[in-house]
Length: 533
Image (tube, rainbow, N blue to C red; front, side, top):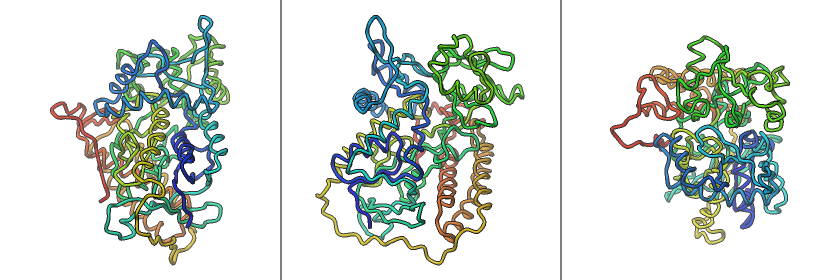
């Protein structure tokens, strides 16, 4: 038994922020299935949306967020996260995070940029690899904390709860089982306070901007433990993923459009004004559907993002990472448009929480992309994600300390059994796992992507039911490995996306269906909430 005051699952911006704060109060384990640097946060290019200018205001940031969220944002949560953003930014700066600055009239200030859906410049950034800068500094700060144990290459399998152990009491978390990927040993880890910060589920789709670790692990674990899951039908497709066989997951940051880049067809003609008065700066759901429609209308493989109207030195200095990546495949963005297509990018739903990250399961919080606070509603406003990571992770530790005081819980001792492998064998044919993995991602792309229909969703649901049975057979028959665990979580998360999508008989935000092309205007907008039991 390995006992900690806090266990944090995930090493992105939310997980590390939670761990650093928790370390001031007790012993913390950070469990991450790859290296600490592998996370959605570290791949974030654009930046962090936060009011920093006198020309901006909290009310304007809130208004832009509510507008993008298509009626499903929780306004109280939005206001809290927006208002607490500046304090969290100040903490990052104190840790050494270097946000880009500029000098205006003798004064040095943050070089704020603008992205789709924002009415003001409010996005702080470090060139075009903000996420990497933030996570690098957070990792350095976490490594200096003596109370933090960083367990890399450790895969969280399942949460341990009182209900699973058969105790008749308020259901709560007691710990989790964790696979040490280096040794194959399964550890039993005990804690009354667990923060899930496992990121999103982009790898559920065939084409995604997400890293390989984004397989919906936290959502699937919380679901199996009985926590409520909300709004998983709202999967944001980033409009501009580089279209090239050698870099299929490379995101072209939305900040390019904020600095004047426009979407054009193969003939160099702008087309976004036909879909929205904001043109290329419309919110992501509108831009993604427009690109999808243009590709289907013209029969072409992609559209193009053109920033050649800007000077070459401006482009290279502002977007060095994108410029380098494009050059590596023979595209000079200073002279020619960049071929782009939409790709799965961000889950706006997740484990249902309040603004503290508190889930429906006592002792369990979820922070970052894995959680659904109500900030994003039916469509995330660009660069609000890292803001949510910082604020909710910070609040989650305060919440857990208040609800589950360290050393003051008057509980009976819980006899938590060690992991039992039983009569299992090693997997002899990984090809079967890879085939199922590929089938899940292809059917989700074909049936549950940017434009949906009821018939497509029904087909996806039927096939996923069969795949879940196959995957469960693998799970119980073979020794657990990261490949089996990822496949198990992938099919579970895909099923939750489809289940939530089937329940929504309207088109709203990121969920667009040809069978119900309009919003339900005759009743109050509602969340899609599902629970296992």
